[in-house]
Length: 112
Image 1 (tube, one colour):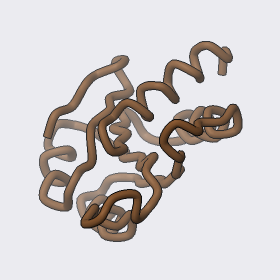
Image 2 (cartoon, one colour; image 1 turned 180 degrees about the vertical axis):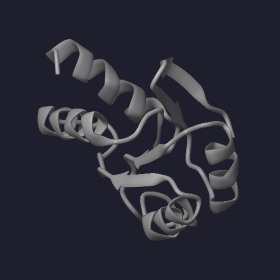
Image 3 (cartoon, helix red, strand yellow; image 1 turned 135 degrees about the vertical axis):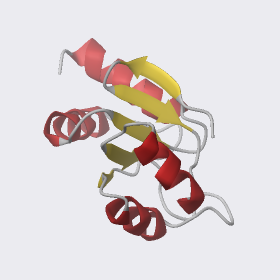
């Protein structure tokens, strides 16, 4: 699992699996955000499987599916609102981590 720190309280990663959740909790993260729609790729773990593992590990979990290459202003606003309420630090994931990083950049650009 490759984690890229964007800010002190926000990092991004490519698709995680259930086996990564204890490592994420052990690394000090308090929340996980999934920015990936279910069934985007064959064989990807479902959001509900990751949510259950996160909650069992004591982590907050949110799902904001963003279609690759089709990020909207509403997506950025919704992500910003989630980030304000979630315990920090937050790890956001998608297929490669790029969508999550782009959402953060859009939030910053919009001054949210």
